[in-house]
Structures are given as structure tokens and as C-alpha cells.
Amino acid sequence: MAREFAKQFYHSAAWDKCRKSFISERIATDGGFCQVCGSNLGFIVHHKIKLTPKNINDPSIALAHSNLMYVCHDCHDNIHFHDMHDGVVRFGSDGQPLPPLENG
Image (cartoon, rainbow, N blue to C red):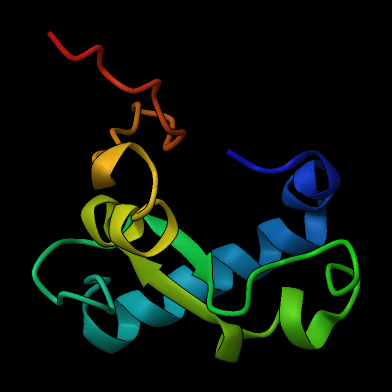
């Protein structure tokens, strides 16, 4: 889920255009497979350099294809949430993380 400072960015026309063009580029390159595992189809455009309040307005970080990866759910879990909930994170159909399952 986008942090508060990034919500406006992720709803911007600039991000939407960048995201769509990156996905199109990945589909043309390898059919849109995950850039980490290469086994599953990509689902999430992930920033290699994490967006922060200091760099979110820098297009060379926030909107550069060189800073993006197209990854599947499983690899995104491993990249982004590996320290949370013993590494088990589930996503809803909208691509947003779901609350952890109760143990027991």
C-alpha cells in the first residue's frame, strides 16, 4: 500500500503514463514476465530505489524506466515485505496487501 506521501504521485497522470509505457516495453521485450523469477507474469511495477519524500519529485528516480522492475506477486512479496509477518504477505485482486492471517 502506498505511503501517505506517495499517494498523490501514484494517482498522477505522469505515473500512469510511465507505468503503462514500462509495462508495454516489458511485454515487447519478454512477454511481460517477472524480471526477478522469469516464471510468472509481472503484475506490479516496482521502484528499485525506494521512493522517499526527498526523491519522489525527482523524475530520474520516480519516473525512470531504469529504476523500475516488473515483478509478480510472489517476488514483490519477497522484495518489499520480506521482514513482515514471517515473509507471508497476501495481495487482493487490486494488488494491495491484505491483513495477515491470524495464527491458530
